[in-house]
Length: 140
Image 1 (cartoon, rainbow, N blue to C red):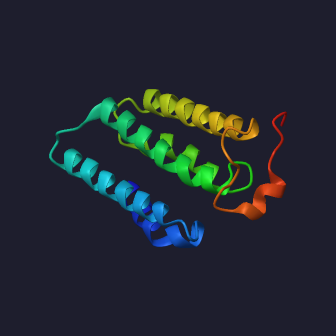
Image 2: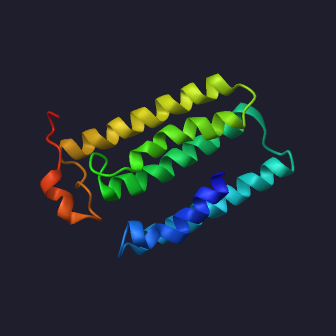
Image 3: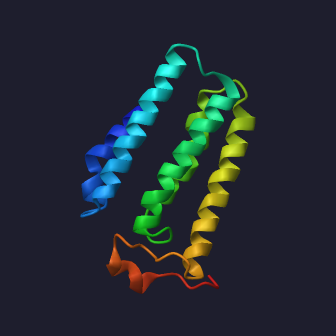
């Protein structure tokens, strides 16, 4: 599933974030990391909770960049933070523990992104400047 998501990200990178060449490179890097993790899984070099958590952190980091570029309060991409715990828990023997830790990590990442944009430390939706009028207030 992760590899399919990475391939879709590579294919649709330009349509989601036009004129952002770095996004395509990041999507290709994510695909390579996903293939690397799949190789580790296939050869039984990486198993269990540590593998699920480490790949989940990579997933959250990858998701955070397009969410940042498109605006966390005005795009539909933050839903992907909900998929990370589910996908990683499905491949772990301690499903609930992995899911809860990744759900907490994804939630904290999303809140931090919103807070940094709300207080002005990060520009809001830099890939979509037309959304600047919809920038949420810091109080919100």
